[in-house]
Image (cartoon, rainbow, N blue to C red; front, side, top):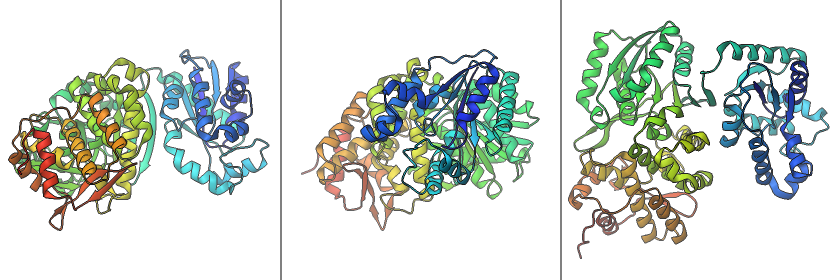
Length: 550
């Protein structure tokens, strides 16, 4: 067994690691010392010469050199990490999987006091108010640390070591098969948990924390056939009473008639306001289940277990719930935040390639909003991600993709939950969605997957941005090249301009009678409501291969 100690600078990782390694006769690996040895100079010198980005590159190399984890019951290695080592999803994928991550949790004020007494220079704290600096680090990093087993790091070293020993014994007792949590965050829009192989155990843990002994699962046949057996077993082990209600697969679930049928089933089951709904499925299922939860008895709690890529990176997060009408997509809905979203990337292994590739339309959107690392990830490993290649899972690329997209959405929604902000608010998430929703509707919500439609909408947004002088040629070229590489937004659609135009009129993003367009600029997006009808007609014509009227 490898034990990995994580936590803030000043949390006592080095001292605890030395004591643990000595007690178990295990190898002690201090990552900071490994970095200095590989680089041939002290960490402060690395920061001075290469900045934090250069240091993080050395850090990733040192972590990669750890090699495979030791999975025997005996403690083989004790790994002490730098405070920021687990910020990078690539590092956490290596450090947490098949190892025991332990979080030495201390208050920032205590950590700052310890740092004042330390002879070790901390470049991210040096020259700053220590308490303020450590508080900022704690706020930014807690979700990464919290994926590990938390122990109280305020006590004397001997007491902290005993707590870690208890965690080690717990790991031995549980054995393999518990999965790996990679991120655990409490946010104002619900808890977010990300991991690999965690679905059943995490849903049971979340429901146990909510204090109810009964839950109703709303799912769909495809998702339930994959996750249902394990989930039911875990919930029943936790002494939870469970009822399961299956909805239609995909977009047919998003109808008012389905909402009525589900509500009548809840009435038959005598579901109470204090009960919890668990939504297990893709984006359409989550939308409908969320709307049911928002309206049943004027609102009951819901937990999401998204089983598709588009649901994990987008639709399960943010509390938007809705169903469709013939007149347009998502026109009837409500804001209803979940208690938690549990994203288990292992569930994505069974997805058809078309579903996975289509979801990358939403991922490109998030990259265009300003995540340069996400852009690079899609450019470097897009085809692996699109095909669901095992290499993309084994390397952690899928987990990184889900985390970067999902967390970016968390931050946007938490700042503007009900889409009242301007360009920097939630409306930015509608990049590619105006014409994307319009072409979805023109196809009767059957021809295109949502992410495929968003890709066409992105193509149109780039064209509009170019025409208005908003999107520089280099930026436009990079976005379009990425869509092309991913096999998205290509060619022309078999719809009439009239059908697309009619759906666009029903778009929810109208304000004061004018449609607000989200368009790419040099580094992110802007919102404009002055896009002329002529430019819109040209954008529609480009998508459907029609001639523009003179």
